[in-house]
Length: 439
View 1: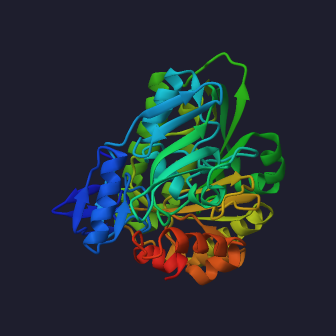
View 2: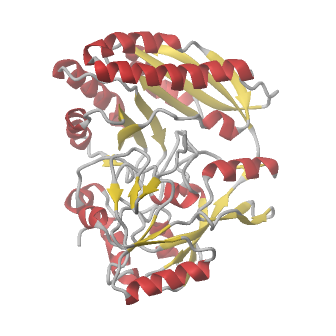
């Protein structure tokens, strides 16, 4: 099954199936010049413009009734600079293809998220991240950007060139222009040892600070209706390489984590009363394992069960209290939650609208299977997250608006002022950006 968004009868749908749009036309430019021409033509016709990647956002951030730009022909590596240790890549390149190409060159990104279906521009524009004590989101690894702005001109930015644009455009929400190429800092490929093991909710929350401090990359999944979590610690290793054996990998990552989990979702949907029992079984199905491999094979995993997701960044020191409140809310509500809750961290960064901008952060992600009612659960979770000055992931379900963001992002006004300068006529606006950035 393709993980990309689909377009049928002129209707575009996202991966999660919760957003659709009917653009006036779609353009698939084969060059930056063609993309710039498409933006100028849209202006002549009085149409808005949005670029869309694989549709892995659960918000309507890429939806438009104007011109939909599909960047799938703008792919591949433009340049590798081994002296500067950077790689410049076309915006439509899927992360999956970038990771494989870098590994072939003996290179790697420092950190990455847990799925790699997205395009590099879609992932970075929405602030996609993994987990890390010192290493931050994918966007924080950007050293340079090229984008087509509202008047159809091509603008390059870095710390030295147009630095005020660079500060914001690394996570630009598609509001400042259409990203055409990204330069990432890379390093020689390295090995990570992953240690996955079950741990009780009480143990992981009481020892969270130590687990965070002792590991380069720490994350865990809590199974609602149980006192169980599955923890994952990834740390650099001198080797040797010891990947998960193929058959074991298929059994654990495909059969259990995707196949059996999908069946459990179907059963839970048909009979919600069975969900707590299924959760207890699921939480015990995955056993401890340790393996050593190159980064993208450790950080990422296949996600074939379709879902809808909300994720908030809270100050790292508030994560345990926030989680305990979420557990209490689920227990008291009568909600039936069939998906685990994912918890990760990121260090503070200097990107204007990064969810970790200026503060050490922890991420709490809640999910529901595609097609199941998620509003009651997400509303309860969001109430808890916002009480801790949470910042929602730009590509995941939330109900916040510009007034809220002005309160939780110290540099919010800096971003909107830059948008006024780069896109005064709101060529790149849509309903979502009107809500989150203001008109």
